[in-house]
Image 1 (cartoon, rainbow, N blue to C red):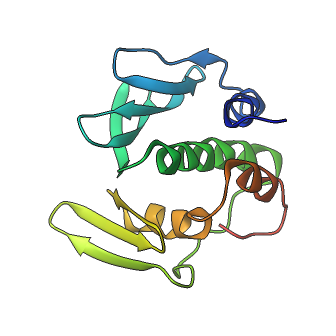
Image 2 (cartoon, rainbow, N blue to C red):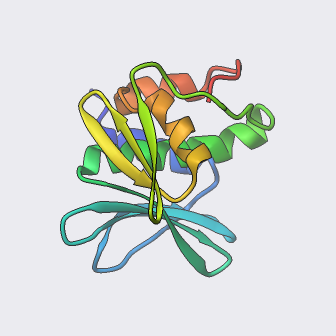
Length: 149
C-alpha cells in the first residue's frame, strides 16, 4: 500500500527537490538549490512556506495537516509539471462548491469540509480544484498533461 509519505517523497524526487527541510516546527519539506516548500506546525494551524533563494514566504494556512499536505503536493507537483509538461494553464474560476472571500490580510477559501487562508487569490483558486482530493488522487491528476489547475 502506498502511504501519503511515499507520495510526498516521490514527488519531491520527481521535482528534483532532494534536500530535506528541517527545523523544530517543520513537519516535512523539500528543496532544491533555489526553491523549497515546507509544512510548518504553528500553534493551532499548519502553514505552507515557500523558500526562494533564502527568502521565506508563507503562502497558505490550514487548520489540518491533511489540507497543508495537499497544498504542499500541489506546489511541488506544479514545479515538476512546469519542467516536464510545460507551463501550467492557470485557473481564473473557482471549483464548483467553493467560495473565495477577501480578508484583511489575504483570501479565505471555503470548500465543503474545509477552509484555508491564502496570501494570493490565484493560489486559492488553484487549490480549490484539489481541495477534496486525496494525495494519491492528486498524484494521478498532476501527471495528466491536460490543463486543469
